[in-house]
Length: 260
Length: 313
Image (tube, rainbow over all chains, first blue to last red; front, top):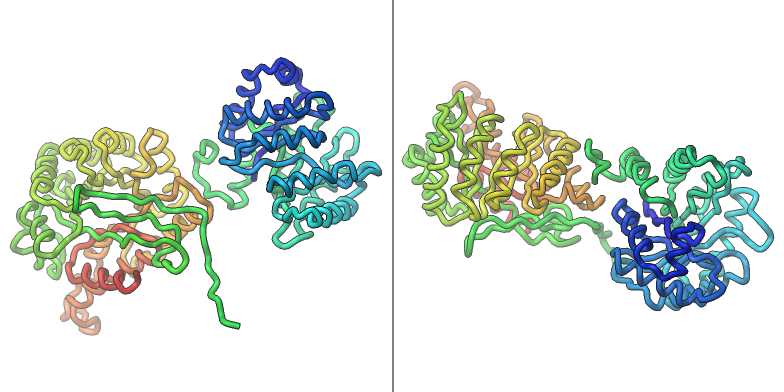
């Protein structure tokens, strides 16, 4: 399973300050920690970035790729910022991933970027009308996103469907519905659709001491259903990913499997 | 519509290992597909076969194979040259059987001297094997490694309980290394991990998952080897992408079927034909499961395997 290292988010104070001051040190340090822990991609979340989004994303992609040999997940709703990031992205270590389009007409043009720059894209299964109620509703939205991706000329294998993980503390019944959705998404296409989650949403709002317990156990269930990728803190989840891979026979067991 | 055969391709690849020097270098491994599946991927190196010789006369070998070496068996240098010059061996495997405490207990220095003499008198690649005594091998192989420093030989075998000293010796002297585990794929992977964690180059390692003769558990060896190869190819597992080694001669030339005479077992037919076929069949079976380096004893069995390989390539 692909881990998209998540720690570079504008929500974190240290990262936000580094972004504002264009201080490469903390950005590189976080990217390196995620990469060395086993992340296959680094998430660069600059938020809505209404002012100066373009130069910020450009700077983030360049800074991350100066430090680690990995592709970047460009995380913003700002179309211009995404395009600016794509223009400087080095594809030598893999194609970038756009985070994200959805069933909201304002987010459709992002598919245009995916087609134009031949990159991968996350389709978040929400529309304009609020949060999806269950697996079926998520699958219906996914089908619409897939149809639109085809219109824009984005191949199905470049689309990652995101069921939108919700907080267990406020919407407990959604936790299992998302697990079921992972299975349902795959059945929408042959070969199966790729799937991705923003994992830490599950424990958002929970006490710090139990967050990683919730995250990792939840991840185990999602991987079992066939999850392709997770935006997560690599250091927190790598043990779970490796262990589930061994249990499911995706890797060959050896006593030192956690060290590999 | 014309039939198109389905093709299976893999993400992983076996490391290419070379042994020997200058124009006598032998390459094996390097495939990105199953044995002989050159119609599906790259399978360009022929499996390598080394002739087995010993530091002491082959007194415990059955007559059929001992008689082949009757004029040279008393001297490892003559024996090695005979294999190289008369039998056209492309590699020699020198087993230091005489160092075993129950089989002469020759010293590490004596063994190293034999290794040096044999190496100096041949130009084909040399594989140096201990007597499979855990403690003694640690001593013997360390000394033996020093006399062939940088000579691109193979040293073997490192096992779970003695790998640290033997792998360190192979590393210090820039040699290839055979890592042996006892018919257990998970332990084989674990041993490779531990050896590479010492800093040993994973591309200089050769896997011996433990051999067995036809009729004596070869299905276990076959299955472990096949699974190792599938882990290398389908899971792209770098800890399992080393070429594999089959110690065929040693396991075949001790079983009943190569020793029971025609008077004792009249239904079994000619003992010579029977035992040579046994070695050849064991070897070809292992080749099918993924082995790339064989150590064998009888020249006619080697010839049979070589012609099988030529037909399969």
